[in-house]
Length: 119
Image (cartoon, rainbow, N blue to C red; front, side, top):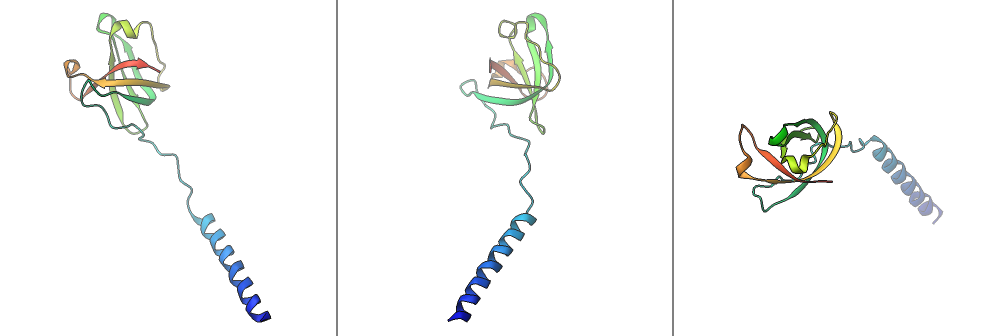
């Protein structure tokens, strides 16, 4: 009976040692980039984008244009002059905005999303 207890204790210790070794050898998850949600396809859909403002420019009566990045993707943004006001962003400043897709605001290559709220 003593031999049986010794075998069980040995197996438990061996299992614990193996599981510790495996845990230590596994690579810890890294912070992932590319966290933007699925983008809206109509003006009836709204999503919140959080990231860094890689570009921001006031265009007078034409409103403000910018680009937000999540580290992988960059999304073009526009907001009308009334909502833009005197808002400014430094390059790569953290930002969170609610956006929608407005087919009337598509003037160039790629898609531009309309900011409806600054968070």
